[in-house]
Amino acid sequence: MNVDIIFKIAAVGILIAVINQVLSKAGRDEIAMMTTLAGIIVVLLMVINMISQLFNSVKSIFRFY
Image (cartoon, rainbow, N blue to C red):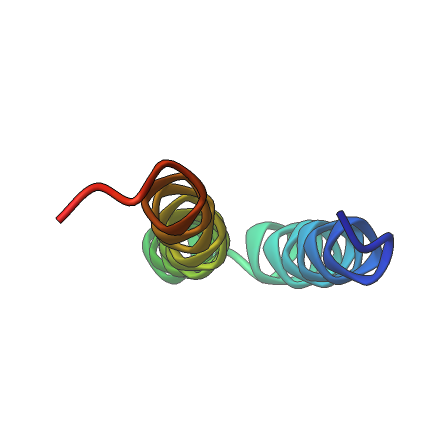
């Protein structure tokens, strides 16, 4: 497992947290919620990609078809 993915997820989390705080202070709570949801979706896509690679590795190791 690469450590890069952990740093990428942390960077997305920090960026979304800062954007959320700025938008909340500006009174744009709806947009802040949308950016938070977008950040969660981006991280979930990254994790789903990793899980897919894991399943492909397991399939190739045990020669499942």
